[in-house]
Image (cartoon, rainbow, N blue to C red; front, side, top):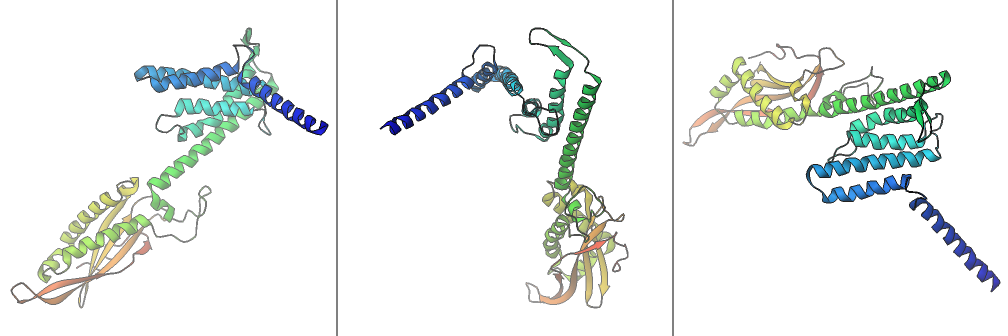
Length: 341
């Protein structure tokens, strides 16, 4: 019986201690405290939800200020330092809130600029108290001691360098998303892009251009009278026709990429005994580890075949067969490649 009573008292004491701890956090001892600012921020958030127009923005603005002030106050009462620095963890949290407040938006709270400026803002928040002496009611500006100046400069400069590296990541990532064909290059001399290979991968957008262009060209040539096809394959006409079709394909299929302006399509025509060879080229004009760039080629063989028209008379029409894959070549294509008809 005594053991049971002791256990009950222990549970009651633990519950009482837990309640006292929670109450100490939630209920401030005085009105001027960090809890008051947090509650004001929550209250502002609720009010802004029901408000409209510029009133909504004003209430939300003050809500952010209350949240930042309350968080900064709470995290600096008993600061925990970031290992190896004198930066409080609270400054990191407050810096994040300030960065979100300054550079976020309703559609996307956390933006690249939010992450980029976060380390620098946190460092500045850490450094500001070093220039102030006194208490809450009697504070004045001061110049830090020489040894303090050195560590402030090192902290701020290191944080700015970190921000620069984060910005470089976002810039590189944007390049590779807007210009995905850059990933197909070697990058073997790059110290920043990870996962490079010695061999050039086939750029998928160059392949897409030729794959989408092929059925259009086949539709233009297949079962067309041979005399018309031969006129179509003459150098001035074929370059204009294929180039125009290529621009339409690029605009339609690569419209989401900035690199669409760096691709162009050209044909090459060669005479053979049985007919013609039409090479469709998608040429990359953007940056490359090879000064002359690279291009992809899909070859189509065009031959005359006998067929019957609607009247039953025999006529000669064109038959076209294209390679299944595209071949990647380094350098720029020669105007005389394959010979022009």
